[in-house]
Length: 353
Image (cartoon, rainbow, N blue to C red; front, side, top):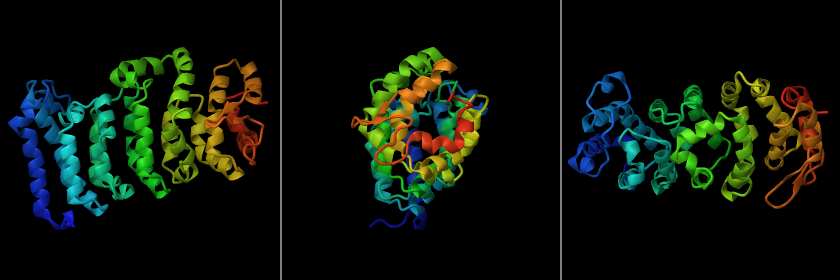
């Protein structure tokens, strides 16, 4: 068994220096890890000439404050030396994630990172709920967000919600969430043929998201492919401890940020009550997932037609069970029964009754 990292300062220092030396090595340059691009930030590095020196300076400047804290936090969360070095070896040999190492991350390279087998090696047996609350992870996350890899339309929201992400992840694990199921679900989306074009061309995501008519036309097929007919994602969502996570308190401020200035503000502000009443009455996530396409279709209809759509149309589970607004489901209550305590809130979005 390897010695604990926190009790082996010489190892930590050697590992940190080895990573820096590898990044600076001629081998890394010849391998094409450092493309000739101009550093974006901070301001001091924007004055550098385009090329290797500017990129390396930017990477070392951004990452170096968090390298040792991440290693200490990783050790405290149960990580082992051999896991760390094994994962590092896999990442450094993977050309798909080299843009991240070069300080030139984009959605495609982040997607490749999440799919890398190095992630499984790195996180096996690690208390991730504890790890993400450390200074190291928070610093790395902040650096990633500041690199502005998200489409411009999403970047401000990412900057506002970023501080809550570590706590939401920690609450996910505290409520019983699992690592393998999460990454299986995420990877099934990242490799979905309907999603990949958006990863390859983030501008397409921005243009689609900003066009309600186009979004309405694309969404039904996207929802069916990504969720209903995608077992890893569907099964993960069905078993997600939603009520527990919402009750921890960090989901609501994110919901408020995301719905600010929209007709969904009231729902964002009341999300904990909506979740508690829905689940405490006996309804399930499976009902909601099956019925969601009906609600989205009704939302895009004229107000006078929304009530008929909500009451008359049905959603379908992957197993073929129908889910209606007023019909009990699997011996439990109907969705209407579960949302009745909050009809006043929901009528701000839908015409119900």
